[in-house]
Length: 512
Image (cartoon, rainbow, N blue to C red; front, side, top):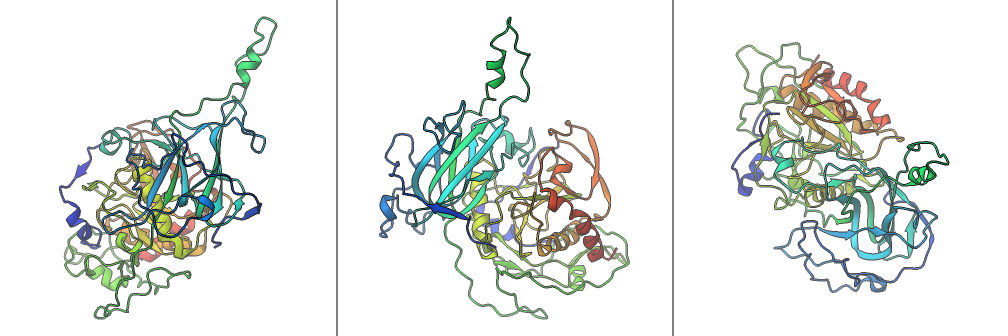
């Protein structure tokens, strides 16, 4: 795999690179019957609130009393990053709980209080180790005594990650991690991790080997150093003051909406592919919360083309910037990583569950961002873009929405590709039409900037995955699902079935 290309641009230049410089619902889990609040366990050894980096969280508290002895939410100051992470070590469960705790190898945490959080996940020391087992959590809604039902956490097992041998993988303390799960505002948690049992005995039981049945019952060891991560996304960014509408352009609508954004159908273009990555001086104001949509004509005009050339490129869609969803730029690594091109797009689901509203999507993104960086040890948010259930599109990894930013989304195939995560879980739930449409709009524009045909095929070289060895050349669809490059359920069976529709719609938006 080619070496990671990084710039020396610091945080002070981050805003400039997050905007285009080239041509470019239910609200909470179902609650079970009320149960008594457990006693606070926060004073026990080993349960300090820490970031996974090992830095103890500030011990400042608000003046608002916490319910029933729970730890109060940490107060935020102007010098303090928004949000926080509580990292709690898991231990063998000796007390029976729902007939699974106390079984051989089961680890977890009994019911306990916590400072308020909205997203959970489990991490462990060795990024190469896989978690063979099931992870389940139940949470208590903040200020109540009602607990949710048990919810499954997708074990994930490193399929979303930086490529092996890359600077991001080798130069940081990267951890193994489950997918994160959005649980809504909560202040109590219980978790259990049950290892798999071997599918078959090593050998049949015989009088000569009476211990074979014991060996068959021995569970697969769980990874070492497992910790439960409880992520508080912090508050949404303050709304920007009203701005005048750009010349010859409609006013920018509200940043977040619970209804799909609308856009005019593009003009039909019949032309050849043209290279597109030139600097465009007429861009939205730097530091804005939203990159406004352009018509197809405006999009084409913004591209520096060879004389007489006309590109297949879709109109630029409206994109909520990192500032718009409240990304704390002090969390990520200062430099940016780039590759040479964007030849393909991999579609993912975030596996965070579907219990969020579109107004909560920025909080979900901030939580995933913190989980990727502080808990998993990545340099930044893993995906290049995200899409919520209402079709809103969000800038993901920093470095510029029009640029070939190196992501950490498809192990083995991050080079010369982009990753798009649809927020939610779509293994057994159909993705909303608005989300699929947004994927079509985004790929029509971004792939068009690099001359890629959404209905075409492309040959990629594997950087190494559990499906393709390093160096293997693989022919894939230009718009592929994560499972095409890695043996995984992602992006979920229901979303994967919609990729054909996305390819056709994306190509039509390009004028093909």
